[in-house]
Amino acid sequence: GELASGSEVDIQELLDRRAAALMARDLDGFMATVSGDSRAFLRRQRRLFNRIAGVPLASYRLVARPDRFGDLVTDSIRALYPGAVAIPVTEERYRLDGFDRDEAIEDMFYTFVQRDGEWRIAEDTDLDDLTLYSGRHLWDFSRISARRAGRFLLLEPQCRGCPHAPEAAIRLAREALQRVRSYWDASWAKRVPILIPTSARDLKRMLKVTFELDNFVAFAYSSVDRSDGVDYTGHRILLNPDAFQDRSSASTLRVLAHELLHIATRSSSGPFVPTFVEEGI
Image (cartoon, rainbow, N blue to C red; front, side):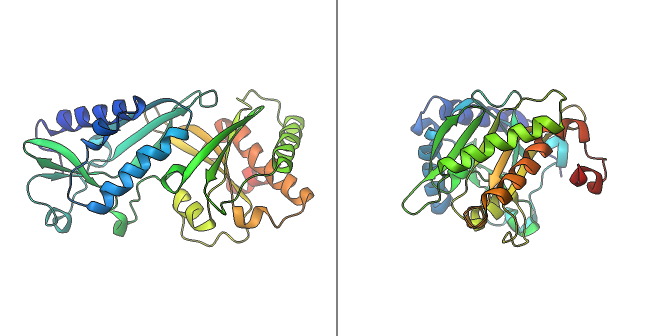
């Protein structure tokens, strides 16, 4: 479907206020963008606001994109909320300070509802049954710490019993970067965030996959900017904490070099290079 006339402008104004409040560390302003329809969502949003304080954000914005899929609200979802309801896809666009030259992008499927004549966000999981999952980050699951280590930004969870990257992991990442340089001399940023999720379950949710991750040590993850063709942005290495600890140094080095080479070549490989060629590099 299509958004009602005038709704797109009002929803975008709401998203602008939400993004500005987050960057200004204005909790009241941020929570004012959320409706009270779901207590669970209210709690998650408050936790999100508190946790994201540890993220070194250079910029953050939210952009409603009804031109991509139209209004995704279904009759069953509309029946859950009184009044007007809309679900245009929202692009969450942000940059990590010193590491993202372009905006990383995640699709958010916010349910927008009208309360007292103004739009608010009621939920972000109403389309999960259709496998349209809102983006999830490390800071959706726990507080995080950010540690710069040369050309790497290490984002780790802050909680009792949470996995952390030992100094050996940073050393291996640096060795992997040197190995990539010996294989690929084309220009690329050579500055990569490394993310350590709290568990393999959280990693699956961040990657939006359903297969088991037991045999995977790390993933090269990039977002896609469709503003002008297809551009890859927001490059990250995501470690599988369950598998990373159990591998030998030599095995881990090979995996990290492999994933870093994916990131180094991503702008050159594009979406149409056969998988066997890209993996074979």
